[in-house]
Length: 442
Image 1 (tube, rainbow, N blue to C red):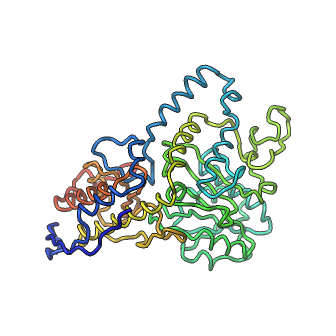
Image 2: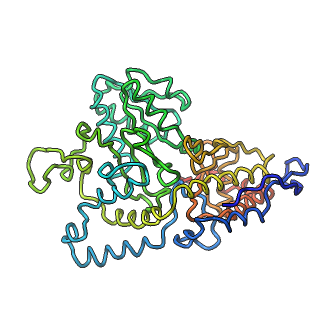
Image 3: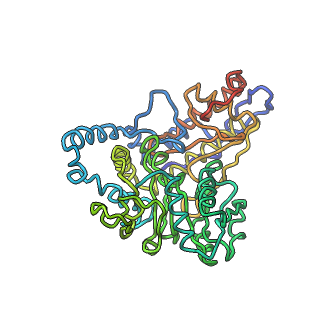
């Protein structure tokens, strides 16, 4: 892939109201950006996604774009499988085994082995199940260690479980840069989201897992903003448990099925609390007493949602064709380009980069596949951009998030998005009355 040129000497004047009018040294030209697109080994994937004409979509970190093959695969399931086979589809079409068979396919993308992943339930429910199992494996310890910057639902699920257990446990929250310092013999489990949902900063999974194991604690990693965004190596890092979703960088659609990982070494000891019938050793014996199945199957609770699973299957087909090294290289380049262009075009307009500036091509990753800027008028800026057909999103109190999905985004999309941002600022569109009240979904 062509490299970003950073030594041009073209000059253009600033023209944003209230911004210093000194000439700005530009290091990026449109020709440079187009050269990156012409040399992109992933460019062939863009045509395999549904992208509305004229829309620049930079929100794949919230909901990925739809693969073109997905509706056809779901339609096939409806007509050829359910429509033709009815209940016979559970055997003829492999519905009953799909949570585990699809889990084995996903495993290669996240550094897991066969029989270590099940595609089931939601991320929050899976977290509850694994957190309960981990605490039971360390009965003499009472502390769940997490960070104040974690995604709130993870903290809520921990709080709910602690209440369910009678209040004898503690959720200990520290800042993300003091996790290892907070580890001690009281900690039963470290529960972290690998990629910070606001800043895109990425924990060093291997280092933290080793530090947790050194004091006898277990780890649970939430990979909602990691899987499909950059290479993940759960077994290489020695991770104990993990959860993730399918609708962000894996493009399986709104509310797509979640998944969980249990390292093989823990599968005999890990007993989750939601002991539904399909986690039973012999579910069709209809025995009155629960007996857990062997391996990852015990973490399946109830009948799988086949429509969601086949949608995920279609999306995963596309992802598995891509080279993750190429994907990471382009992700970093897209993010770097966005940062450089915002600073070049809007550098005196009050933006603060809150994402790590450095993003690695190998671990530690530093920054994931999103870039976040803070701005006092962040909500209005995001809404004004959406009105222009540039879709990012906003998180309280002032965070503008832009996600980069290398399979369907172009470098010229980044150039155009920043051009729109500059125009919004120049014209004051973000100060419109309509943006004074925030919508329910931001």
